[in-house]
Amino acid sequence: MLALVLSVLGLHPLLLLLLAGGVACMPALRTSLISFSVFRFVTIGGGILTTTASFSLVSLFLVFLKLGATVFGSGYVLLAFLRADLVTHRGWLTDAQLVDAVAVGQVTPGPVFTTATFIGFILGGIRGAVISTVGIFLPAFLLVAISGPLVPRIRKSKPAGAFLDGVNVASLALMAAVTWELGRASLVDVLTVVLAVASLIALLRFRVNSAWLVLVGATIGLLTSAIHLR
Image (cartoon, rainbow, N blue to C red; front, side, top):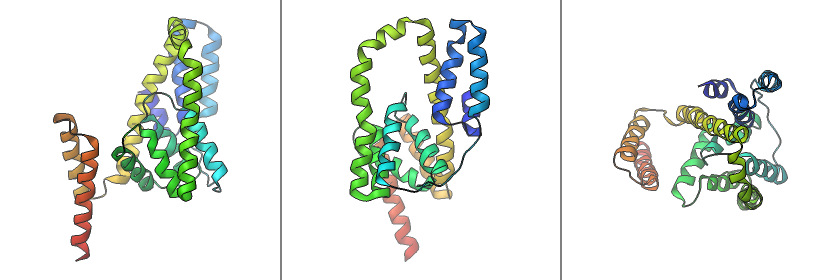
């Protein structure tokens, strides 16, 4: 709940994950130094920073390289980072464009990270798509090779294990917060609300593959648009 509130207030996702991990490992460390450090971390890291940054392919690569190196937990946590960096901070995308990218990422097979490819295409064409894809996947290959043998040892450490538990639960809060924000950009009329409710029931009750839900929604959207044009 604390992570969800801080996310809504505008704390950067990376700072939020580190903060949650630090708070979770405090009982294991039991030192006043950690408590003081976490308090200062919250007071310095809070607030919403909104700017508009100039776009270039180099900056695009660096953004996705950073995301690939720092995103932790489910791939859906990526959406919180994307919104914070590309919508709120840099102003390269709108919430509606980010929702489009998420939809395309759901149609394609593979992890949610494929959303980065579509975003790169929106911002920089074919070159942008290639650069963003390489940037977001490159750290994974390196980090998995390096950290794979160390994870079991890290989990044996009570402070490190508690830190990872805190990061995991904060990831859930980030997913909830970004779902709310993107939902506000997507649910714009009665039709979209009905589609959302029907899709949720189909997904949870009948376990319909998300790709089919996206395709059906797209078809209904096209038909509705054609009717309005007529």
